Image 1 (cartoon, rainbow, N blue to C red):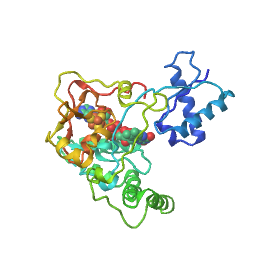
Image 2: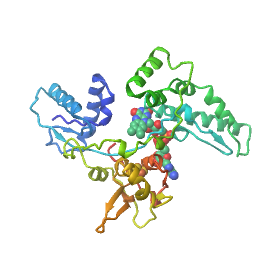
Image 3: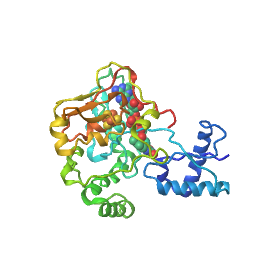
Length: 326
Ligand SMILES: Cc1cc2nc3c(=O)[nH]c(=O)nc-3n(C[C@H](O)[C@H](O)[C@H](O)COP(=O)(O)OP(=O)(O)OC[C@H]3O[C@@H](n4cnc5c(N)ncnc54)[C@H](O)[C@@H]3O)c2cc1C
Ligand code: SF4
C-alpha cells in the first residue's frame, strides 16, 4: 500500500527533491495510519495545484491512477518569522550576555533559512565565551570578541548579501521587487553598491479597512482545507486552566474603540489559532474576547497589532503547542 503525506513545505521543492521528501514522509505516515489506508495526503491550504501534483505522483508511483486518496491534516503550527536580517540587527552583546540565532535576527530572508545561521551565531558566541574563560575572566564581560568574529564570518557575508531582499520586495512590490532581487542575487551576488532600508515598522504598514476589498474565503471543506479550531486541536496546544491571560492588552478599550473601526480588528484574521474574537452581544454592543488557551505561541499579535497594544508574555506551567507530528 502506498501512503503519502504532503505539507505546505512541499511547494518549496523541485520534482526530484519532492520524490525523496514524499518517500520520507510516507515512511513517517506508515507509523501513523492503519494499514488499510491506501494513501494519505495532507495538502496545503492553498493547494489545488499541489493536490493535482500529488495525485500524479501517486499514479506514477503505483501505476494505479484510480487509487483512492484520503486527505488528512497531520499537524498544524505557526510561528512569526524574524526576517529583518542585517539591517535590523540589534546590539548583539551586553554585560554577561549575548543574543544569538533568531533572537538576534540571523535568518537569511532571501532563502527563508535560519537554522544554519542560528547555529553559526551560537558557535561564534560559544567560542567567544571560551576565549574569555581561557584568560580566566570572572564573568560579566561584554563579549566584543563575539561581535568581531561575527563580522569576520561567512554568516555576516551571507546576511550582507541578502540585506536588500526584503526591503526591495516591500519598496518595489512583488514583480519589480522580484526582478531586482533576481538581478541582485544572481548577477551581483548580493553586492549592489547601496543598501535599501525598510523605514516603516511592520505594524505601521497595515492598510485601513475602508481602503481594502473584503475577501470572501471559501469555507473549509475538511478535505483540502481545514478550519482554525480543528487545526489548533491537532497542534496539541494546552495551557493550564485558571492562569492569568498571557496576552496582555496595554489598553483594553483599543480593540473595539480604535482597531475595529479603523482596521476591522485584524487580530480576528491574522491570529492562526482564532484566539481573538469580536463578539456582538445581545444588546448589540461589541466585545473583544481573548481565547488565550488556544494560543500556538506564534507571537504574531505582539508584532502586528497596529496599535502595538498586545504583549505576549510566557504563560504559566510550560503550556503551549506540542507539535507531535511535525
Ligand atoms: C514556518 C517556518 C519555516 C522555516 N523553514 C526553515 C527551513 O526550511 N530551513 C531553515 O534553515 N530555517 C527555517 N526556518 C527558520 C528556522 O526555523 C529558525 O531560523 C531557527 O529555528 C532559529 O533557531 P533559534 O534557535 O535561534 O530559535 P528557535 O528555534 O525559535 O528556538 C528558540 C527556543 O526558545 C524557546 N523559548 C522561547 N521563549 C522562552 C522562554 N521564555 N523560556 C524558555 N524557552 C523559551 C522556544 O520555545 C524555542 O524552543 C523556518 C521558520 C519558520 C517559522
Ligand atoms: S494569540 Fe498571538 S501568539 Fe497566540 S496564536 Fe494568536 S497571534 Fe499567535
